[in-house]
Length: 228
Image (cartoon, rainbow, N blue to C red; front, side):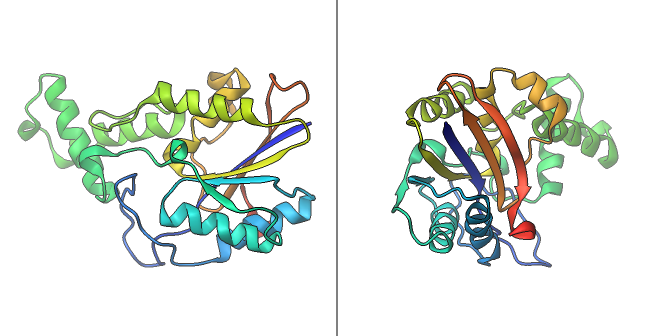
C-alpha cells in the first residue's frame, strides 16, 4: 500500500481580521498552532506515521508541517519543495474577496464588450462572483491569475509516482494548489461533482494506491483539528 497525505496550512489571519487572497508572493506566518498540531494528532490517531514530509517553502506551510511533525514525534525532517507552492493570484494578490470580485467583474465585462461603467456594483460583483464560483467548483482559473494548471497537475502526478511501496508521504501545501491533486485519481470531473474542492485551513486529504498507478481518495478536506 502507498499512502499520500496532503494537508493545507493553518490560519494566517486572526478572527476579526479581513482575509486577503494570499498567494505565492505573500509569505505570511501562522497566527495559531491548533490546525497544524491537529494534523499531526489526527494522523497519529489513524496510525499513519509519515516516512517523508514535504512542504511548500513558505512560512505558513513549513510551520504547519513542523507542528504536525512535532505532534507525530518528529518522525522525519520537513523538506521544502517548491513544486507545491501556492498559485499566483496576479492582480488580486493580497486583495480582499470583495476587491477581487470587483476587479474580476470589471475585466470580464470588458472582455464581453460591455463598458463596466454602465453596470451597477451588484452586476459587477455578480460577474466576479461567478468566476470565483467556477474556481471553487471546477478549478477554472479566473482571468488575470498566473496559474500553470498543466504544471501543477504534473507535479501532483510526479509526486504520486514517487511514493514507494509501504511509504506514507505527507505534503503540506495551499488551497489553490491542493485543488488540483485529485487529478491523480483519473476522474477529476467526477471528483469535482461529488466534492468541495476548496480545502479548509488545516484540512487533511488522504490518497491510497495498492498497485502504484491507480489512486483513490479515502478522505478529503477533513478538519483534523476538530477530530484529533
